[in-house]
Length: 233
Ligand code: C5P
Image 1 (spheres, protein in one colour):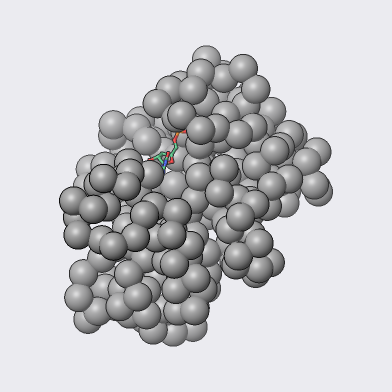
Image 2 (cartoon, rainbow, N blue to C red):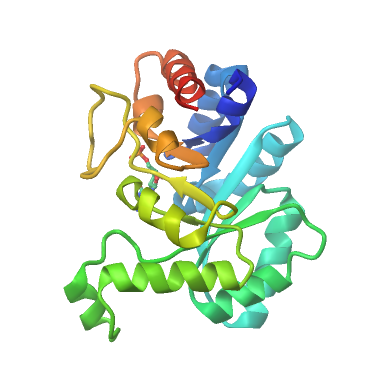
């Protein structure tokens, strides 16, 4: 794979405390990175104008907002995010929510990613929340519902890549966090995969935060990950 294609597969998670810090990180990475994830924390700290700014400068933006509400509200919020120029938006994988978000896209090129079951949930948490299925069943059920609702992809952990690619077929986008270059600090990630292995296992995009943002040389870290992705496929 060429370097430009590989670069677009790496999504840098801008998990930083302020827009000023995020803007400084984007400047440090320069043309080495092309795709950024802005999550809830930065969004509520003024991250939406930064998203517009990144789009205007030619970067792609993944807004990790995990929308879930009544269909009318989800549809109207989705339309607003599409208008910002985001490339990806996350929504929770409830059928009503997914259908509402999908219906609001119109001609927008924005793609929807469903969050099936939050990875902080185990079997006991699902029972406590009133669900009748275990984690594995719930993930598979919701992933199939996402595909059937016309949602473009799902967010998943690296260890689920092979099973989900087999279940969902070649067209769904599989986007995975929990990626660590060999030898990197794991942080709080428990089940990790290297960038090369995650791509080889079927991931379309990798979300990487701290191994880049906490590195002594963030740009060098991005370049090494992109080279590993390019070499993997
Ligand atoms: O710093 P690190 O590379 O672990 O960041 C991973 C990013 O992916 C963070 O923004 C985190 O919130 C997100 N994420 C995750 N695990 C999930 C879902 C999202 O690490 N199950």
